[in-house]
Length: 199
Image 1: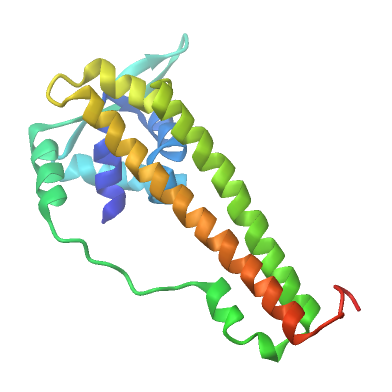
Image 2: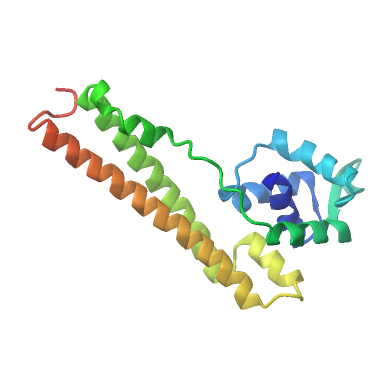
């Protein structure tokens, strides 16, 4: 059910159409909680049904309309209640680390490729997360800008600081995964001295 609260978090900044909300989701909370559009739109309808949001048709272009969603008082109360709940940590599902535990079952060059792909994946994520962090620091991140413009309840420095804290954690995670995979490459070299990739 965390998708519901991720959507509530975004909508506490300002009302949004489903299209704008899905777009904002992927450049902000989507880094914390992944969900495709095919899950976002049905969840918005359920949230309206459950009284957490209200929807209204707004003009879109010359002849069409879109649905805009706003948080209700019940939605704000539900979000606050969720923030107070203990986190239910899921069990690990990590295919990269699972495979690494059984690298003896494949050729060194295959294991090497897996580790190189892992490094490339986390280098890409590190770049993406760093860009988000830089925009948050500058207060030019679109969601942070909206929140700072509309939020009169919370300290603006705290709003920014908690976002910075979160993305710094992502960067630490990326650095740790890159270091782990590089250590794995060193291990492969030690166990298979002189055997180059593809040899």
